[in-house]
Length: 403
Ligand SMILES: *Cc1c(COP(=O)(O)O)cnc(C)c1O
Image (cartoon, rainbow, N blue to C red; front, side, top):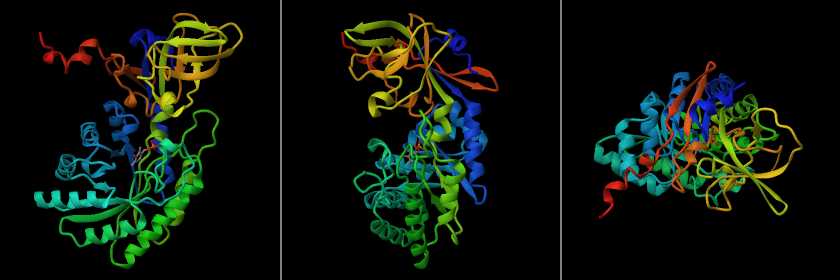
């Protein structure tokens, strides 16, 4: 049990709290599921990129999947070795590609023929051979929210199988490219196994056809996307997930790379916010809190559900209320029609499953400093990011003020 009242008193609100022990359990469960093969779990840094969280995964032996050179540097700073770092993403800048090659990370996940050309040219300038993997788009419907679906041709990610094959041949014939892996990532918050199995099978067939023309790849990168329980959804057990992938790899001697983000960190995270006021507009009940869409945007962006816990015993009947923040947008809500007991100024609400795509998607909209972040490990709490102050928010502008 986490003592949210004590944490709110000690660190103030709004506040992010991360239970590192839960994250350990998730990591160990997934690693164990793949034990029949060599595997690398490359934590998707974007899910929760706090340095102390990333260091925690580094200590467990995790690698990192990064989608900007900033994330690559974060991973290195947190102690993840370069040979466990991948660089993915649909729009890498030349400077980012250059730095990734110079830093000698495990491989770059290339997402288009044009990008392959840039990687080759930059590697040539540097007199190096860049290790690459190609992100293929298997055109499988992952059956998740359209904003987090990536595995269909209508999405911007990856390349179709035909183009991928041409790209592997180009890479194989280049002095500056070393094709070492194949990658797919069909979406996020996946709760159905069949699309994953189907995608893995399509990609495994591709590997076999590449082997037939003498292109041997070492890494079979299945991306991330494993779903978690926000409410009462059925999720995929790590064992079944791993079995579905292992099942299609028969006869292929490859290391499995998996890039979980949400699965590792989401349910270890909590967003703690304090009630400011209750108000009724006609029939509609609102609970106004000190946290807002700039802190946790998932409800506004995806209509996402987060379970809400009221801290302490409250008297009275539960009635539906919208939990809203102070930001000047009608889209600023943390929950809609959520059954809540009567609340008073100072009561605490805790939004669950906030450890992934929470703080990291935050902003300073409305000149609101971002929350502090705290971790709990072995029952002890410690601050891992300070609350942003007004001075922090204006630091990059102040010097340009004219008289
Ligand atoms: C976002 C992302 C992930 C992680 O997704 P989760 O749903 O958080 O597991 C993995 N790989 C790539 C390429 C991504 O863009």
